[in-house]
Length: 148
Image (cartoon, rainbow, N blue to C red; front, side, top):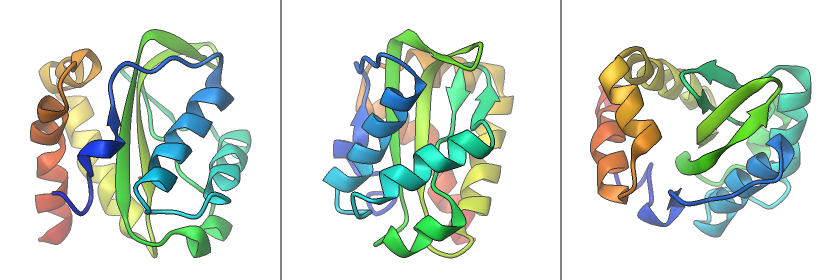
Protein backbone atom coordinates (compact mmCIF):
# COMPACT_ATOMS: atom_id res chain seq x y z
CA UNK A 1 0.00 0.00 0.00
CA UNK A 2 2.80 2.42 0.80
CA UNK A 3 3.95 2.42 -2.82
CA UNK A 4 0.54 3.47 -4.14
CA UNK A 5 -0.75 5.66 -1.31
CA UNK A 6 1.98 7.59 0.46
CA UNK A 7 0.63 9.01 3.74
CA UNK A 8 2.13 12.38 2.75
CA UNK A 9 -0.38 12.46 -0.13
CA UNK A 10 -3.36 12.15 2.21
CA UNK A 11 -4.49 15.66 3.04
CA UNK A 12 -7.81 15.79 4.85
CA UNK A 13 -8.30 19.47 5.69
CA UNK A 14 -7.78 21.22 2.35
CA UNK A 15 -9.46 24.35 1.02
CA UNK A 16 -9.85 25.29 -2.61
CA UNK A 17 -11.29 28.36 -4.28
CA UNK A 18 -12.72 26.32 -7.16
CA UNK A 19 -12.42 23.09 -9.13
CA UNK A 20 -9.18 24.06 -10.89
CA UNK A 21 -7.59 25.06 -7.59
CA UNK A 22 -8.61 21.68 -6.12
CA UNK A 23 -7.09 19.86 -9.11
CA UNK A 24 -3.87 21.86 -8.77
CA UNK A 25 -3.67 20.90 -5.09
CA UNK A 26 -4.21 17.23 -6.00
CA UNK A 27 -1.52 17.39 -8.65
CA UNK A 28 0.88 19.12 -6.28
CA UNK A 29 0.41 16.31 -3.76
CA UNK A 30 1.50 13.83 -6.46
CA UNK A 31 4.50 16.03 -7.31
CA UNK A 32 5.42 16.40 -3.62
CA UNK A 33 5.74 12.63 -3.17
CA UNK A 34 7.84 12.27 -6.33
CA UNK A 35 5.20 10.40 -8.34
CA UNK A 36 4.94 12.93 -11.18
CA UNK A 37 6.70 15.81 -12.85
CA UNK A 38 5.13 19.24 -12.20
CA UNK A 39 3.83 19.37 -15.79
CA UNK A 40 1.41 16.54 -14.96
CA UNK A 41 -0.81 19.08 -13.20
CA UNK A 42 -1.50 20.78 -16.54
CA UNK A 43 -2.58 17.46 -18.06
CA UNK A 44 -4.95 16.94 -15.11
CA UNK A 45 -6.52 20.33 -15.82
CA UNK A 46 -6.73 19.47 -19.53
CA UNK A 47 -8.49 16.17 -18.73
CA UNK A 48 -11.07 18.04 -16.67
CA UNK A 49 -11.71 20.42 -19.56
CA UNK A 50 -12.50 17.50 -21.87
CA UNK A 51 -14.58 15.43 -19.44
CA UNK A 52 -15.54 15.86 -15.81
CA UNK A 53 -13.86 13.53 -13.35
CA UNK A 54 -16.78 13.82 -10.92
CA UNK A 55 -18.03 10.28 -10.20
CA UNK A 56 -20.81 10.90 -7.70
CA UNK A 57 -21.18 10.62 -3.93
CA UNK A 58 -19.22 13.86 -3.51
CA UNK A 59 -16.09 12.34 -5.07
CA UNK A 60 -13.97 13.32 -8.07
CA UNK A 61 -11.07 11.34 -9.49
CA UNK A 62 -8.79 13.82 -11.26
CA UNK A 63 -6.10 12.30 -13.44
CA UNK A 64 -4.01 13.33 -16.42
CA UNK A 65 -4.49 12.90 -20.12
CA UNK A 66 -2.86 10.17 -22.20
CA UNK A 67 -0.19 12.70 -23.19
CA UNK A 68 0.61 13.18 -19.49
CA UNK A 69 1.69 9.57 -18.94
CA UNK A 70 5.28 10.49 -19.84
CA UNK A 71 5.29 12.80 -16.80
CA UNK A 72 4.41 9.99 -14.39
CA UNK A 73 7.40 8.52 -12.56
CA UNK A 74 5.40 5.85 -10.69
CA UNK A 75 1.79 4.88 -10.07
CA UNK A 76 0.35 6.70 -7.08
CA UNK A 77 -2.80 8.02 -5.48
CA UNK A 78 -3.39 11.23 -3.56
CA UNK A 79 -6.47 11.72 -1.41
CA UNK A 80 -7.50 15.27 -0.62
CA UNK A 81 -10.56 16.08 1.44
CA UNK A 82 -12.23 19.46 1.13
CA UNK A 83 -14.56 19.65 4.19
CA UNK A 84 -16.18 22.87 2.96
CA UNK A 85 -16.83 21.36 -0.47
CA UNK A 86 -15.79 22.51 -3.93
CA UNK A 87 -18.18 23.36 -6.77
CA UNK A 88 -17.46 20.84 -9.50
CA UNK A 89 -19.58 21.91 -12.41
CA UNK A 90 -22.73 22.13 -10.31
CA UNK A 91 -21.92 19.19 -8.02
CA UNK A 92 -20.27 19.52 -4.62
CA UNK A 93 -17.05 17.55 -4.19
CA UNK A 94 -15.62 16.89 -0.74
CA UNK A 95 -13.06 14.21 -1.68
CA UNK A 96 -10.66 14.00 -4.59
CA UNK A 97 -8.75 10.81 -5.28
CA UNK A 98 -6.06 11.87 -7.73
CA UNK A 99 -4.44 9.21 -9.88
CA UNK A 100 -1.03 9.11 -11.50
CA UNK A 101 -0.55 5.98 -13.59
CA UNK A 102 1.91 4.77 -16.16
CA UNK A 103 0.38 2.52 -18.79
CA UNK A 104 -3.18 1.36 -18.15
CA UNK A 105 -2.89 1.04 -14.38
CA UNK A 106 -5.51 3.74 -13.88
CA UNK A 107 -8.24 1.49 -15.30
CA UNK A 108 -7.80 -1.06 -12.49
CA UNK A 109 -7.52 1.74 -9.94
CA UNK A 110 -10.75 3.33 -11.16
CA UNK A 111 -12.60 0.00 -11.07
CA UNK A 112 -11.44 -0.75 -7.52
CA UNK A 113 -12.28 2.76 -6.37
CA UNK A 114 -15.73 2.51 -7.95
CA UNK A 115 -16.46 -0.56 -5.83
CA UNK A 116 -15.70 1.40 -2.67
CA UNK A 117 -17.86 4.31 -3.80
CA UNK A 118 -20.77 2.01 -4.62
CA UNK A 119 -20.82 0.92 -0.99
CA UNK A 120 -22.78 3.69 0.71
CA UNK A 121 -21.12 3.19 4.11
CA UNK A 122 -17.58 3.12 2.72
CA UNK A 123 -18.25 6.14 0.51
CA UNK A 124 -19.57 8.09 3.52
CA UNK A 125 -16.60 7.01 5.64
CA UNK A 126 -14.20 8.23 2.94
CA UNK A 127 -16.01 11.59 2.66
CA UNK A 128 -15.92 12.04 6.44
CA UNK A 129 -12.38 10.76 7.08
CA UNK A 130 -10.29 12.92 9.38
CA UNK A 131 -7.39 10.51 9.92
CA UNK A 132 -5.01 9.19 7.23
CA UNK A 133 -5.32 5.70 8.73
CA UNK A 134 -9.01 5.62 7.77
CA UNK A 135 -8.18 6.42 4.16
CA UNK A 136 -5.40 3.83 4.08
CA UNK A 137 -7.75 1.18 5.48
CA UNK A 138 -10.52 2.01 2.99
CA UNK A 139 -8.26 2.26 -0.04
CA UNK A 140 -5.94 -0.57 0.98
CA UNK A 141 -8.18 -2.97 -0.93
CA UNK A 142 -7.34 -1.13 -4.14
CA UNK A 143 -3.69 -2.15 -3.94
CA UNK A 144 -4.67 -5.76 -3.30
CA UNK A 145 -7.15 -5.84 -6.20
CA UNK A 146 -4.80 -4.25 -8.72
CA UNK A 147 -2.02 -6.68 -7.83
CA UNK A 148 -4.10 -9.82 -8.32
